Image 1 (cartoon, rainbow, N blue to C red):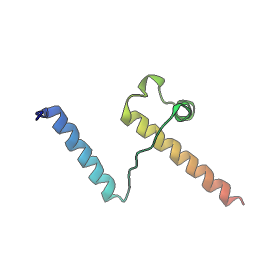
Image 2 (tube, one colour):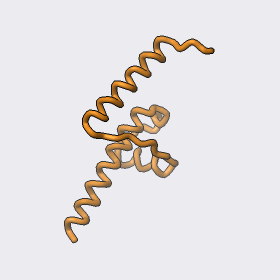
Image 3 (cartoon, helix red, strand yellow):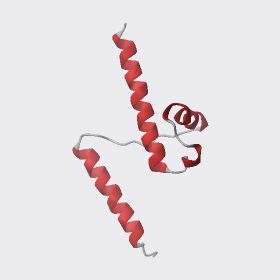
Image 4 (tube, rainbow, N blue to C red):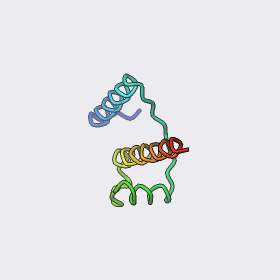
Length: 81
């Protein structure tokens, strides 16, 4: 059995804390598959640094912002109908 490092345990504890905070405010998290087109949209519309596409937290925040923009645009579009 592999012994877990203190850094691993700390990251895991931080993950659990963030998850519980999301649950407390009624939010849910889902895994989303991102392809090259999605990354291109994140760079173009959310200013994602192409050198940071391997940073999961940076990409997740940019993806969240992009999703909120898209949903806002859809809501505005349906309000004008």
